[in-house]
Length: 219
Image 1: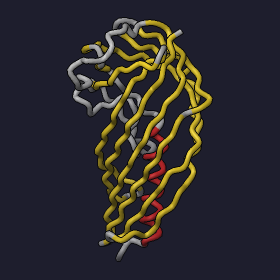
Image 2: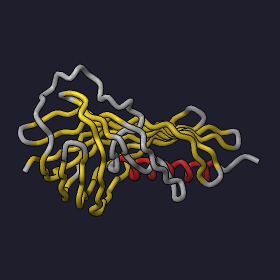
Image 3: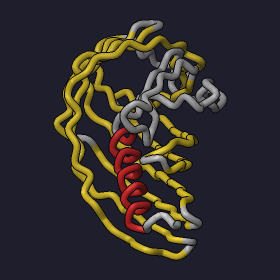
């Protein structure tokens, strides 16, 4: 008996929404980065230690989910770009730690979701992505690699597309580019996540990509 198309689409839609909302703005740092930030270190050697105000996040994201059930193949591609607002919180950066206090923000944008059934475009829709992320705290160890990169040693996150009960913590090192815009420190992060999971008993695979920037203004 073939699984009803409506049910599969509902599963895909739910997973796509979780993938977009849960990780898009909760991108702490990329655990799949090898950890050296890349590049020969040609950026500014300006110290990053000190106190900062959190002034925002911006990112572009793409989440691709594939589901196979009842002899049918479904795929969704969810893409978005956003800038956070109503940003709150501070950061204290020492020579070895990043201490975030009261970090919070809001997002109000649109996501484009393309759904394919057996390779043919089934639906192309723009849907709202509106979320409020209440203030939270976090402490991360890091090392400065060179003038324009650092490595976060104990980044933790909830995986993209995770549903309740699928939370996961990663302690893998990762790299972030360092740039400056006046007195604003920019942490440039690229995220690539590949995972398999089950939603409603139906197995699925997901590939998520994020290119984002965290902005911290020096006090």
